[in-house]
Image 1 (cartoon, rainbow, N blue to C red):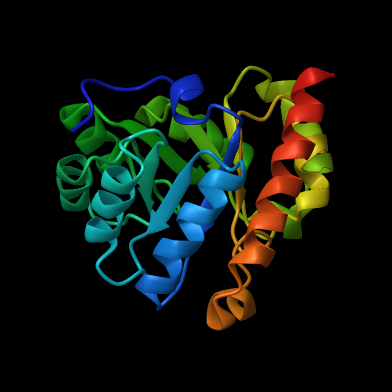
Image 2: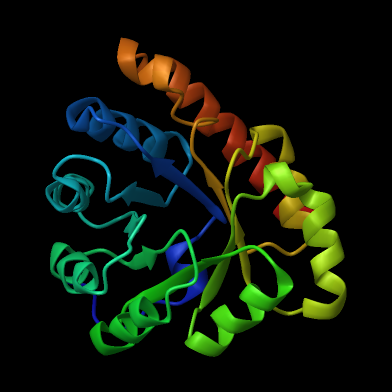
Length: 217
């Protein structure tokens, strides 16, 4: 298990996070390893993935802990302890759940709470979120929405996810977003179904190049 809460910079070293949501845990495992090695250095396994905690343990063991792995779509505070025991570095909720933030505090694990409106974002920070996941970002305006939020809420550490295309990675990072979550853009269901790891590797490389270029600007 990780010792203590890891920092945002430690958990998201290149400010990208691949978000795995699949029914095929075996294909998902291979896809995550492929993405990590190709440049997406942080992975979130959603709780909807079968045997998600075993998958987290397997990824950490296989990579010898080189890459942070977290658990997402967490609704139940009880799952936080399981995440910690599996070696997860962070916990992500889809909506504002202060009780999950409380459990993260007790278990010394980085907390990412989901929110969308300015009021929810403010409440997520009050609840103890280290990062606020603005979700779903793409339907509400993408980078333009973050630009609007940065006025009154400048300084809030944002994660964005929900339909984010790789083409928008640079724009988000230049706006100061701390982490960009890539779900279908990195792990397309059809690529997982075909076990097309070459395609996933190409997407991961593209995302990593976009992130590196934006961080370097």
